[in-house]
Length: 134
Length: 134
Image (cartoon, rainbow over all chains, first blue to last red; front, side, top):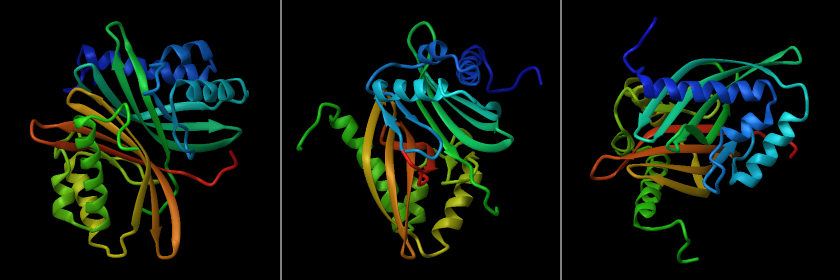
């Protein structure tokens, strides 16, 4: 498909921001990761299986620990949806992770805010998808 | 505390809507649960450990299955935060669940939209919190 009904310039910019977030994670690029975030007390980040972190101090420390630990996973995103309401948008996306020969999936919900120039993440919420009978 | 800096009338209404969502779940009140939702294709609902459901048809079917199955858990919410941006707001909250003598926790992120009259849920995203060393 070259287009779909929910895609316009705004949605494209949100999708691009979401893609840059996962690229920063895959490439362990701390500067790029930090630049993606709304760096306030409002920000929330839940890594898969963990309790959420609130506020930029905790969140930035967690990314520094993760991105400097080595062995970052390959992440293939799928099933992306984008919803926009003015200067707020959210993306749901499946994170398919491959690391150390193992695979896992998380369902992420990322909330973005537009700061007048670009979309930044204010909430990253990753939920492990468990292998359960459907 | 009788007040906090982030609480005003708007936040109170969001907190109240969030509380009504969990009450509907605990009481297995399908009518109340359905009334909480933005019933559109935009809506997203991720039950803990499961892949997200998109659109009201899938979401309403899932709630009907859950709330009519019996044995609904007691849910004690904690660590609630509210963030508002105009007619959009989101709540992070820990769901402490007790059912059949077992306990478990999920970190939920609920996105609400104000429809001119009241706050309704457009995204419910529950992430199981796994027992991992911190």
